[in-house]
Amino acid sequence: MTLLARAEAFAEDIVQIRRDIHANPELAFRETRTAALVANELGRLGYDVRAGVGVTGCVGELSTGPGRTVALRADMDALPIQETNDVPYRSCNDGVMHACGHDAHIACLLGAARLLAESAHEGALPPGRIRLLFQPSEETTDEENVGGASRMIADGAMDNVDAVLALHVAAMSPTGLVLFRPGALMAGNDTLFGTVTGVNAHAALPHEGRDAILLASHVIQAAQAVVARRIDPLDTAVVTFGKIHGGTAENILASEVHLEGTLRYFSAEVRRTIHDELRRAFAVADAMGGNGLLEIRDGNPPVINDVRLTELARSAAQAAVGPESVTVADQIMGAEDFAFLAREAPGCFFWLGARIEADPRTHHSPRFDIDERCLPKGAAVLAAAAERVLSDW
Image (tube, rainbow, N blue to C red):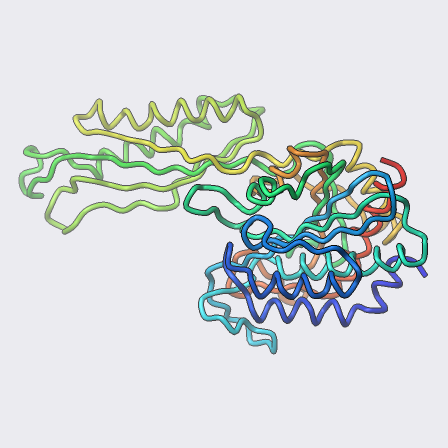
């Protein structure tokens, strides 16, 4: 039987795992129940299991002798969103929901773990080591601004890894379609925290103060001109302020405005330019008699897929699920902390179509859901890619 046929044979098991995790979501660095479920499944399959990696992460390893080490990663954390779906596996935790598909990623990787363990038992798995990384906290960082990938790296999860791969469900792509792109796939991101300070005054006597809201509006205008006028039109970048708060009453000039936003980029040079120009944009407030301060908090670097590894994985996917199910992924400005893993070893991040045709859902939505028919394909492609790395990398 092919990998896909074998995965289809236990598809119901994968679906039930996904639904169990979906119904019991856990936020970043709190994924204790999820990690325990994973550890139990891996132990049952014969993997050596290490718990508490990167705080609440779990690593499973299977060895078939001397050879390369290939890592496969799935993220485990949910989002602080109240689910509105009326389904039997609806979240049981108020205000917490798997709204990005991490439940599906875990199910796919556990499915791949089963396929690879079966192949090893049959003597069909090439020599080497399979290392499965079940990672906490992809969606956010801790109080030290460190996320799950970096915490797992610090705990040795990527030691001696020769290649690392991961998939992510794509809720707007046709179910079962597998999408690869060599090179730059996803943007890097940093977070912006700005403060614009003015001087209080009665709204009827504006000349006696410095209106922080007016100052902030000029700062925002200057910031939005950064990409349009300071970045080469052939490069790609985004600057967005998604949160602004200031003022205490309708008849008082605001003394302080707080802004939060994000920037996205692909090249280090573009990032440096945006950082410099945004600081100049906040200095506009100083030129107008107020004060502008900007803190830029480091985020994820861009996801840059290794060209050779991506071609190897794409070829393995074509063999596993058919050439008609494999296509090219578009670049997107979303960010992913898989990028940190791909700095430790050649990496390949790819998409798995999961669209509900009758009613497509969007990621990070309270109605997010997937077509679960994608799960066996995801398991088969992960297993096929891992086998190919062990034999051909």
